[in-house]
Image (cartoon, rainbow, N blue to C red; front, side, top):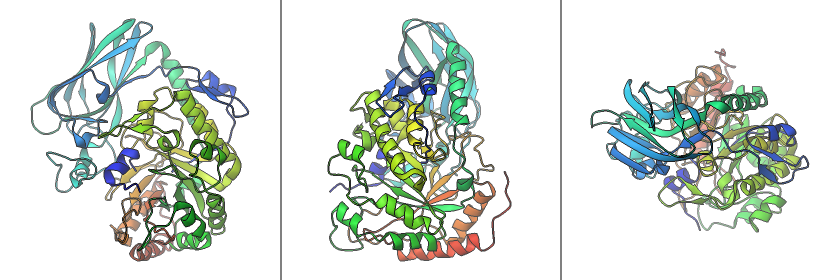
Length: 528
């Protein structure tokens, strides 16, 4: 049996997403992604993404006052003083490139320089914004991996933004050397890098047109914006009973009482439920043929998803689904990192996902209102030319206004082909959004949303141990939720669930009280 701790959970998806229903069109072929047969055939990569992204793990060299240990998972790089990174970049045609940095810093004016051949651009980094408050006890001097509390003390350094850099660099045909230098005194952290982005000036118009097309096709999120809060269950083959021996996954799915489950969600005041399809292992609680083809033996004969959607619908509650997409397409995780190694080509991987999403969409239609796709920053770092428009088309199959979120955790999203921010904030207190659509930060431009862990670390996988008590009182939750309601920013509460489909008694009591606090007084005034 697979045992998953906080570290493995972060690596397989830092902590579901929504979609809608149009077949892939000629517009997909005209975009920067891929085309798919109008009847749902294989997806092909028609163009490479013109934006070049340089990540710390792929640098040819790193030097200076840097830390790239367990706490960084090879996906971000803190500067504790002066440091330098060097990449080799090969391009087919010479030209000028616009610059942007995806970074986090609490110090204004940190000097940063980017060089390529004779080109040199310098600027003073501005303080970035996000939704994490600093840890009250301050950051750790030597943070460990996500399985340690010290990792989470670094929240003030997880305020990543994409910041355009004034000036351009010129790259020649063939191999180029690109350097990033940060200046500063040795000591506390002054700068944290996620990536350097190089956009060819000659293709800037096409890049912006792709973004605008994606924004114009987003789902109507009004119901979601006004939903207040929802719940999130990770019910997996890893899920444990209250006590005693665990039963096989399909047996546990067959035993679930969807009427009781729906009644519990209703009693808790949630207006939507996110249900995990897979995580860790490629489970699927429904007879999805395309999934069974990829992962024989992991689907179930019972269509729990359809039954659950019907049961929830009788209470006016909408169903959304969580999927960890690398687990669908067999991306292989590198030890000690949050990076994945591809097992298939980009076209093969995209076709696998598209086949699954089309079948889900055709089968469930509007019964599935949304998706929350995990591990997307790992996915696009592995597959930089992933055809997002074709995947967006697949996700909308059967329901035009199905929503989708691509989880980039605290990092700036790398594609506009999504409908709302994944919002994996995890802990309270959290900063307010102050608007329905995010103004600055990792999810800029998207429908605001936050995901907060109520009790267990997202799922209950420890044998003969009770679900952890709620981390917050009903009053604390209500205060945050009502603040978010004013912004029309829904809040998803991750709630532990036992293998019999029940939740912790303490959590149930808090959530019932939360229902009275949030809904008894009506909706607060909107700010947007």
